[in-house]
Amino acid sequence: MRTPKFWQSRFPAALLLPLSGLFGAVSTVRRALYRSGASKSVRLPVPVVVVGNLSAGGAGKTPTVRYLAEALRQHGWQPGIISRGYGGSVDTVAEVDSAGPAGRFGDEPLLLAQTCQCPVFVGRNRAAAGLALLNSHPHVDVILSDDGLQHYRLARDIELVVIDGARGFDNGWLLPAGPLRELPERLASVDAIVVNGRAEAAIPAHANRFDMRLAPGEAYLLGSPDTRRALASFRGESIAAIAGIARPARFFATLRDAGLAFDEHPFPDHYDYQPHDVDSLGGKTILTTEKDAVKLARLQHNGSIWVIPVAAELTPDLGAWLHARLNALRNTDGRQTA
Image 1 (cartoon, one colour):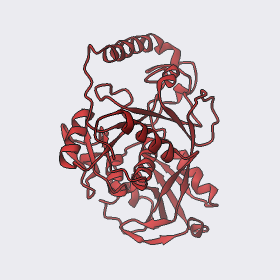
Image 2: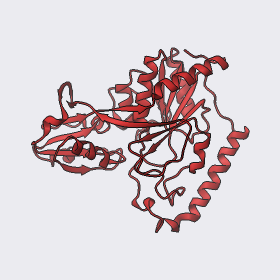
Image 3: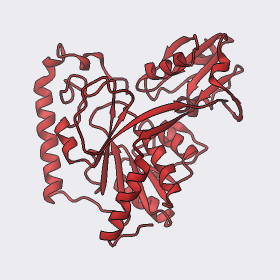
Image 4: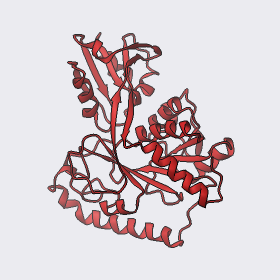
């Protein structure tokens, strides 16, 4: 979702503080009920790693999950991924077919299914999604939950919080006066934080902090992924850059860093593209994100659409850290592990 500009300041957002107080009280009681056992969490037979955030809106969870799936596979694990499937139409639980459509599964789960080489299930009830995944893919020995930090019905073994380095927590208030689902004090109880991009905002200290950079790769032609070009090779062309993500400005900055000049066309996060959205751009070369590409792929467009993939780079090595934590669980927990 695109975050409202008033979350970046204290007025007029302060007018909503009474509602934020109510939201905070309900959230606190709900979490306390799960922590006390009055509300029951579902524990899966394999370790669960939740990758979430405190703020509404995109922070970089999906690239982090994608990075972790690959890193865990390299360390010998067999991960599976669960997601709510935001923007999709699945009412219960479903396995994501990498052929789509995004309208059924959601754009981010579909992207994960296409790129992670592991099963991806969606469902509003993430515990049910996890159980269905394990039933269909019994070889899976660790679950990655894309989002779901506040979904306490699903018991978790490791919590990672992704923070947008540029935004931080904006005005620091709870919804709806600010962007926060939980207050920054919640970070004291999570296992690690991942700061996405250069930290321009104040980020609380944490013993396990990892800095993430999203590095662009070679562009590939939508529908023909073996047709590739270096990003710099687009210099001098008439370009339209389109992005329907939480922060289109981040994508546009990546293109500018490559020395490209272009027309900016930001769209709402999870936007459902229609033919006129791209036809109106004329004969320009179109550059877009992988998340947008899973929705643009269904359009019949005569021009060229080039997709700019990004790969998460984390310092220090988050994959090695998580592998060590999971190995520690294996030594203390009788559940299935690698």
